[in-house]
Image 1 (cartoon, rainbow, N blue to C red):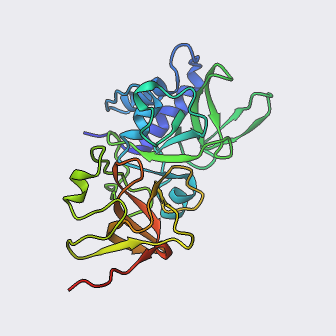
Image 2: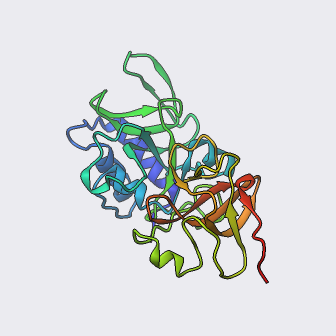
Length: 265
């Protein structure tokens, strides 16, 4: 049985008082330790692996707006610099999720920062800078929120419905995707609920990992590409499209860049 998010969060708070060092458990091992202490099991290669296999992943802003920031949720720091990204993830377009911690609830504990100042904390992580498991705040550089498959948050995540839906990434090369009714740059015959990407300057349009203009993870889709539209909400559409790198992805595009198809019977 999956441990409840609040129990994982409680284990994280308890870990601060134990005094674990970073050498004893890094950020990934700390999260896995808390899940185990709460009665569950979890095993990943690292924070990048956790982010890529999350049941739900979105920006902190999205998570707060959609009620996805709950005790036991994973918190990530995403970096634009991919120089330290493990080679196995190079080129997948998701970037470097360099650090992970756990959201434990508003003002769930107090702890000192690296300057020795005590403050209320809502996050716990294993900090290399402080060389220990420590309390943190949402203002401390955290950019993304994830739901782990191994933790019970009170309901199932709904990929493809809320901002932060998972991406279905197909094989490189457009052939397989074109056969599914999508095109990389020109409309083609197919099923209903399709649209054509349109941009004012005729250039590619951003397909974002979550429904926010602040989302740093995105790919490009050529103007004129035919895409499948799954749903629309608040100016964003969840679509499946062939990106300029040849991969098929399911993510978000602003509806203002989606035009109606013409000349279809």
